[in-house]
Length: 112
Image (cartoon, rainbow, N blue to C red; front, top):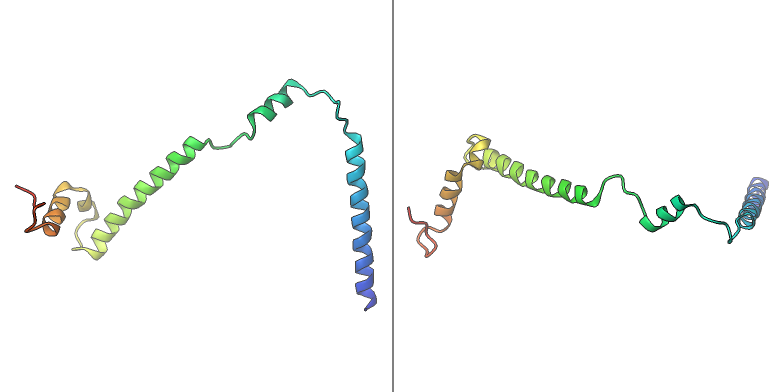
């Protein structure tokens, strides 16, 4: 084995031994009978304090999904469809026309 590798292994072992000794010292310093303050007890009961509450996260996800649906429909109608204005997809007449095309000649045909 090359001497550089032996030196590296030796240094790594020394570091691990020192690190383990520091951990043992820290464990000895803490006493199990140490009294906790009210604030520490309250923090343990509450658990994790979130930066953004869960209900806000869910609201953000719903808004992102709805906006991506609307933008996808607008881009699809504008580029793939007849090339009209992208805002035409938001008009009810456009959806009535699509419904009429799909269900023409069936029981579900829309009555005018």
